[in-house]
Length: 233
Image (cartoon, rainbow, N blue to C red; front, side):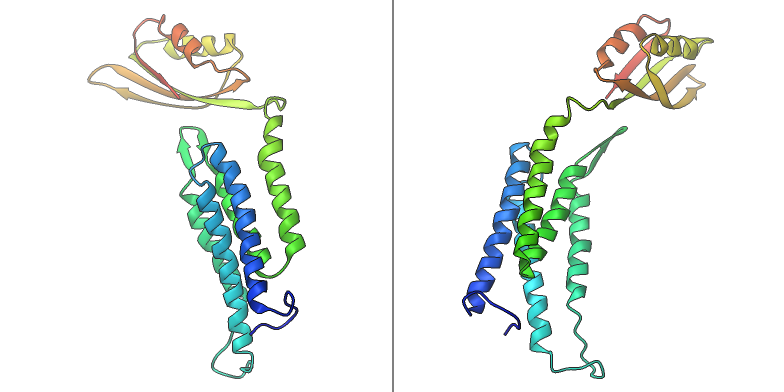
């Protein structure tokens, strides 16, 4: 059935080992994601790894089964097409776990782990055990241990703030003074004016440093004249 070396001369044993290793790798990554409450957890990652492994094994089987057909025949076999389609298919699956909330994007790490897990399954499916094992360790290290560096790394926080108020002169300057006092940077600003109600609406994306300031800003802004609504996330 397959060309090349097999474990103890058994094709079935070779397939079982590949599938078990792929399941183990996907399960370990999925367990870490499950532990942190991510939408793509243990079962999802395990299934992606095993599915990718199965598809690679099947693609190899097709190539061996129809090896007698050369380039001149009507039937042409290209095992690499299956691998390419796996990458594309998992890309759509990963897109389903990415959520955008204002200026914040969540789920990128989970989507990346799904994409990587498919690669682990493909590696084991091709019999690259050392590649799959080393890659699994690197993935687990990046997901588990590198996360501990988050408190050490200085990084910006983004806050989306919306303010609805009576349209009057000087309001925007007063808001800017509040931000400047706290050394906050407005990275994006949009506004709209309701002529009938004489209301102005501001939506701002604010770059913060370290701490959360949403409640503090709300307390300061509500003291301004004509403020009707404040919302942040």
